[in-house]
Image (cartoon, rainbow, N blue to C red; front, side, top):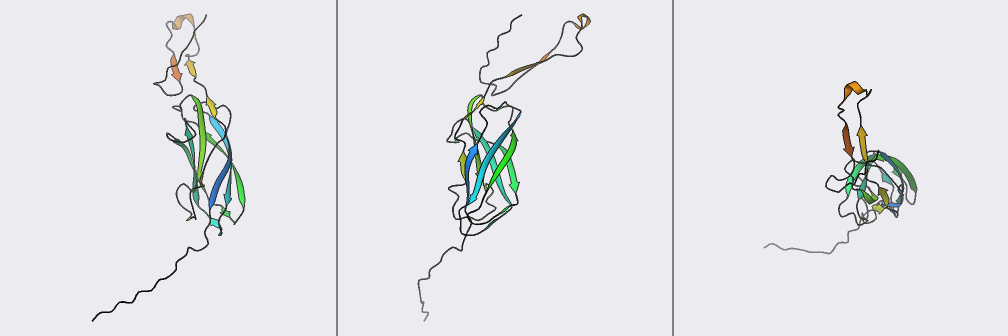
Amino acid sequence: AISLLTAAIALSLPPLPDLAATNLVAPDVALPGTDATLTWTVTNLGTATATGPWTETVLVSPDPTLSNALPVAVLTFTNTLNVADSLTRTQTVTLPLAIPTGDVYFAVTVNSDGGVFEVTTNNNTVVATNATTVPAWLALQLPTPLSEDSLPVTATVTRGGILSQALTVTLTN
């Protein structure tokens, strides 16, 4: 006959790091296709040292809930962050040309690749408290040099933002 013996055992997690993102500062205005400088803080709230590498993803969204967020940069860091220590990042990211115009919100998710096993990931994303205004823009590129002999002139018009959004242009002489 087969006899089974059962006994309850207690399992617990070992000390683990907990990377938290806070204090994201974004620019007030940013243009599509240009660089924007962001600053944020990463703190280890866990009970063990966090040892890299891990990634941090910078997002931009038309709303602070990040429902339609687009990643604009994925950064890899090789830091070691002791318990209760923090570090401040200052990074420059290039905005895509097709970024929505109007107010957008930057966000950063630390340990976005899950490279560090953590107690929780509920505090890994921070959204900037301020909106960044992305104005609509239009550029006209003319060939150089221009002369009366080169008439008619062919020019290139480029615009930023989402192409399905209207852009009103007024030309004056």
